[in-house]
Image (cartoon, rainbow, N blue to C red; front, side):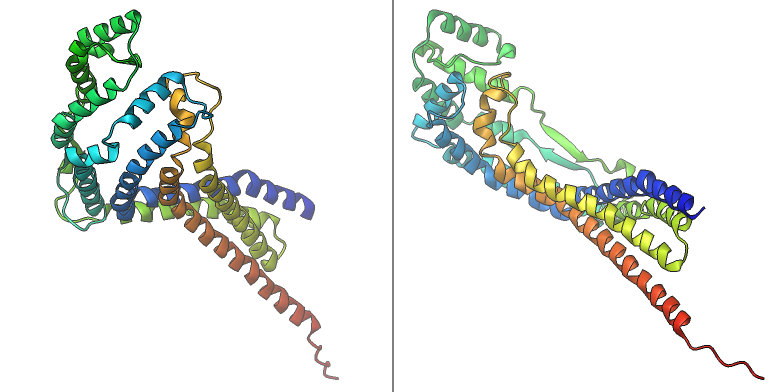
Amino acid sequence: MNQTRTILGLLIMIFFAIPILFGIIWAVGMTQAVVSSKMLSELPREVISEIPDLVDGVLLAAKDENSQLHPDARVWLTAIAGVAKTPRELLRETGLSDWLEKELSDTLRTVGDILNGKIEARNVRLDLRPLKQALNHPAVGLYISQVLEKLPACSPEQSEAWTEIIQDPDRFDEPPPCRPAAAMNMDVSTAIRGSITRDIPDEVNFFKSSHFPYHRINIAKTVTSFTYLLFLIPALFIVLGALVAARCKSHFFRWSGAVTMIGGGLALGLATFVKQIVPWSARFHPGPFSSHWLHWNDLIGDQLGGIALIFTRHLVAPVITVAGAVCVVGLLLFAFSFTFSREAEGSAQAPQQPQAS
């Protein structure tokens, strides 16, 4: 009978308690990450600060003849690297860097402040007009013309491809890696900029206040508190399994603590693994040149480690914190179980009182 109860309690914990606890830990950790004002204010700035280094790294790596880079991509990157003005300088001159660092970052920080109850709810619009103005800046047109001049001469078929792109900019996909005729240079530059800006709206409403009260409300705290209540679900199954399997109080707390530590430990192990594997996986590609993206994947992947680390630090770190806290709770329960063991041993070893004659 005792063995049957132990097996049944173990099955409840293995198939219900541990998987549910594992999932709740990840849900709580990811929710904390998404709604935290720290992520919305710091992550964009950290990613934006990495972009110039990413571009410089790609251009430097393109010079390596041993890199598995598609020939067309190598021609374009070589031409870009041959221009005197660097992409970093172009971003500053056109004001694109300022837009990224101020407009975008400030908008996301405002959203975070509303979610955390620091300011009242209101519409938060991201103005994209300065972005389009920066992309249409004369310096961008001049830069594109200088890049085109660094390309090799076009064949008749490639010239025809450029003509079709100018006539129908909507089909702008993979431009031929060659220098169009001088008379087409301006039209090509216009087509390239048009393909970039035509689908960009004037503004994006990041946060619509119509569904929220106009007084301050800490939405992030409310959501996080609700997710903590979800721990009651795995706790119910842990208690049920421990009650079925345990034979005494000490066994009950020992089973509960062990299962809690296992669930927290699995979540902690996976979160740590993800934090380490994501930067590495950016360099992985399943096959050479199987798509347009994979033409660039090997080259760009080597430069994405810093950005990947930023995302994993902000998204996975809360999961690691929650999982660590669950492990500590499990350890305390497991240690507490020995208190009952010592009390039982003390009662058994206590000298019996002599009976009165």
